[in-house]
Picture: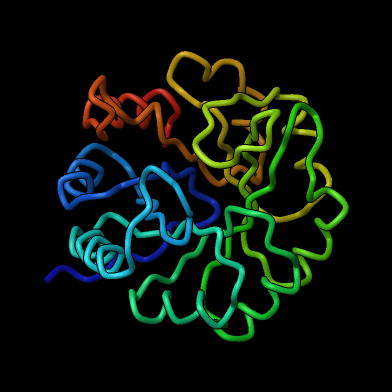
Length: 232
């Protein structure tokens, strides 16, 4: 078995593809140029929601590729439950993709000091709901922020909504951590984010819909094109 890859350095622009649900998806991502596979658990009603046993199996498959790193994407806020899932699945990176408070981050950092904790920042229009808490999230032990768009009705995660470059840059100026960019990213709108791509703390991009083919499944050519166009 190949050794598990180390999490990509925050100095390296990475490509994370969310919503893998099968070993076939993992194989496609590993050969097409992705760095991280987002595995959904604790996302009620989510189209890519997986039971814990499947998360564990796909995380192991990702590590076995030697190039792909699994990320648990979750709405969970119960630190005890979340720590248990991470321990049992062997996943070392968690993306808190809901409105978990800084106290959740702090408790998770205490329980899992070696984990990589990513906190999503939800932006509706030009407004980030977590903006008043940015400093608290940093002090609590967050490693990375992920800037993502929500819909006007409050839907979060894989919304396909785009963010303006000015909104992203204004928000990034208000914290000091590395960050990922999400929100309707695709090969055609790369030029709309040129200044963000040159930001010294941009860690990578996070996509879902743009990595899929017409059948809705993760597609190798789509992932490869994303990696090439976005320079990951």
